[in-house]
Amino acid sequence: MFPPQVPTTDVSAVPADAVLVDVREPDEWAAGHAPGALHIPMGELVGRLDELPADGPLYVVCRVGGRSAQVVRYLTQTGREAVNVDGGMLSWEAAGRPMESSDGSAPFVL
Image (cartoon, rainbow, N blue to C red; front, side):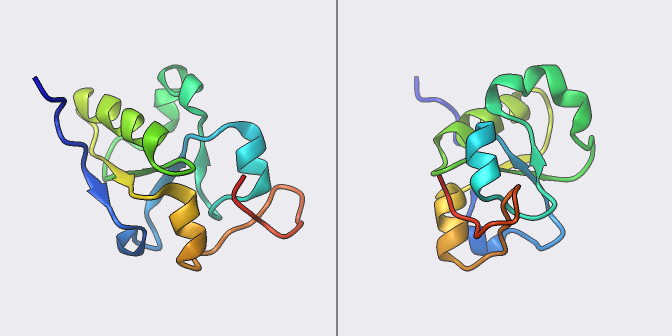
């Protein structure tokens, strides 16, 4: 039996006002992330579900899309509307979408 398809979208289709959930590790987040994104590392997600808005789609991102796909699969199984951002932060950066770092230095994807 094949696993269910994970809802996925291209980085260019993520709305500017989307709820973006970044599930990467703290060092990855510090190096470069989307402004306004929620940082909840994948390993902390279950314990921090109450930090996620209950309504509307959640756009989930990691470095390339593997971890975020797992998180989207979990969230959709719990009844949440969630979408994987295809290509992750590498695609986000390549598309020229806004990024910032935690220390104010030039942001990059770690």
